[in-house]
Image (cartoon, rainbow, N blue to C red; front, side, top):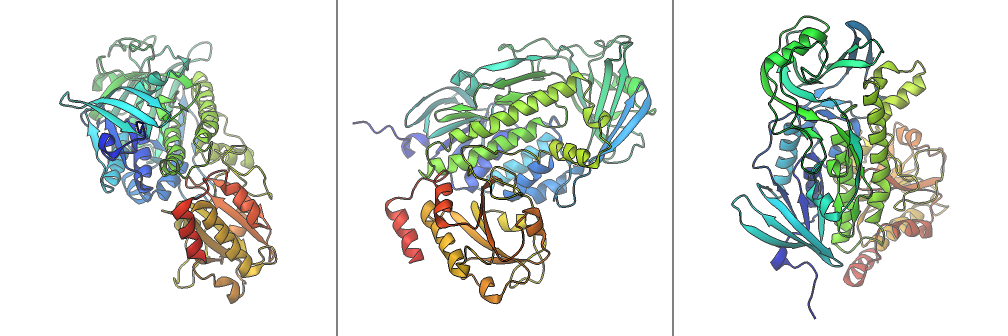
Length: 585
């Protein structure tokens, strides 16, 4: 009988193949490597492209990269995005500031895509994995036990690779998506745009973007200029209609050559004529709110915009993420960030599946959680782009609560998975519940360090975490807490970290948790952010590797905790179960 499981001889030790080395593929590969999964990552391009492209980094993405341990490098390379000025027909119509509640640890940022890719690639290299440049996925086949992929490297040498799983992060013209036969329904915008990375000599405040529009007689947007600040002296990535496509504009750069071979017109046009500095200057002469001169053109390109989404995010052992799954207008800088979070949601599931520790249906939860997010983002960005892309500014509400919700949504901090098959079906209490983002808080004190830390500091570089808050634990006290911890370890084969959080006045007996680290909620912020209700009761939270809550269990009992963990983890068998049992005995 032939063994069809992925073998080291045929896979070179790789358990997952990631196709595409943009920010999405690099995030997927890095998180897999962080969780101990051997993978290979290939990209058809011979080198990283020097294009700014996706530049907006949302606060939620920074939280993801915090959990992965790379946020410091990103923050040092990026510049803050503080807001945007909006001009219509040369008149300032308003300025909106990107202000978030003080408990949110990160603001909005801008970073050229090639810098994002560099930082992720360097982090991946520290785990011993490099991008295989100039390597093309020609085809793949999957069966019940794995995936066989056929690759051709930069030297034209073919290879047949056997892996457990395949992840397609290979963009709008994805070979993986086509190989799966996924539908990619949607449409395209008729206008051609161009991008340019330039410096200007205006005196607009640093950290603010610009959207300037000219309206036609019917009030529709006839011409538009969007500028996003980049690192450097008054440096911006500018996007605008192609000169010549705008009535009354002087002809300049040629329009794109039309749709790609697969009929999807989206992204940079590699075959068209790139706009020059004079083309960009012509747009600035029409639309800049003050006279300015563009200089130091680093790169420019023509691009088209489509809006499409797949009918499912994967099948069997093959999955798609990022632009391979959804494409849409760049309004609000949602695309790359949505893709990064696709990759993060998928990677922790794959890590468990590769090790045989995923519960049945865990991988299916990827589509259940991320496709609704993709549908919402595509729909929202299309609505905004159709109306000129100014809803976030023009409709800035006077109601502070509504304005706060708007900012949290744009920051992708409201993305949640309530009702997902991967989270607990019950919701105990008024605070963040199963599927919601686990919010940060400050003021946590350990028994040794003299300084407080944030909850995200406690969660960083950890897998699934069981947070046990309170002192009661169903009248079991410390013994009840220990039983909950032992239940988590037994149910998962030791794949859950356990941390205890106690109120400020908790007695020393409760603060001593033996092998369980204990933090005192000295500032009371955890109790507020997580709506624990105070008192001497207890409540348990399961925080998934992607920073979302898997469960919120008031007056937790071991049976309920075990039932939730069984939705995610396969029951440990053999040596793994015995080892955990012995360690707790």
